[in-house]
Length: 202
Image (tube, rainbow, N blue to C red; front, side, top):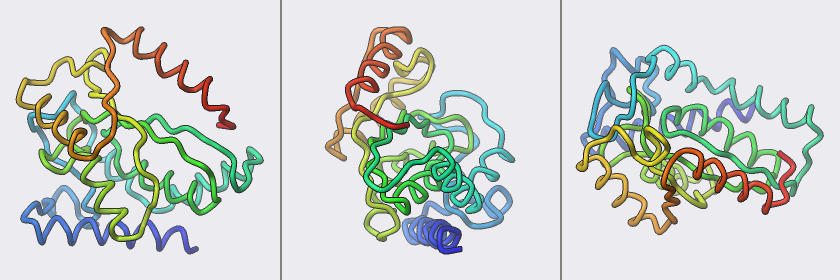
């Protein structure tokens, strides 16, 4: 299955990039060398997360399953979808993007940058940097359309000023809008309004 190899090759690429940039993943925590397992804690960590869940999310078979879900829903090439993703599970986000691009879907991607433990919570290698590495390697083409800080209330709550500065700089460096709101209800409304305005199939 070509999708399996696409995801697995992308993970190999991310892992090798991290090694070459002295950001190796711990062999104990990332035994399959996906490069998509983060740290137990860092300034951009939001909450506790499950390491086994983060590993499971990296399994390339999710791309195959997601592609079948797209087919079952009747999506066809050119259909517009919107993905609201957390930085907590970069493995599943990679799988879904590969499946969507394989089907030729038009993707609008919004990612919350804060991540729970073992997710995309390495300072200097949150989703903006991961996505850039994946695009430069030719494994995905989708660029994020907007970011949020994530964390409590989806406003960066619970993260230190240092962590917020790291994420704000990552968004700024990538040239992607950082969507802000006063509290969770306002953020939900803004995301729902955006969803309605995009005329998406999924």
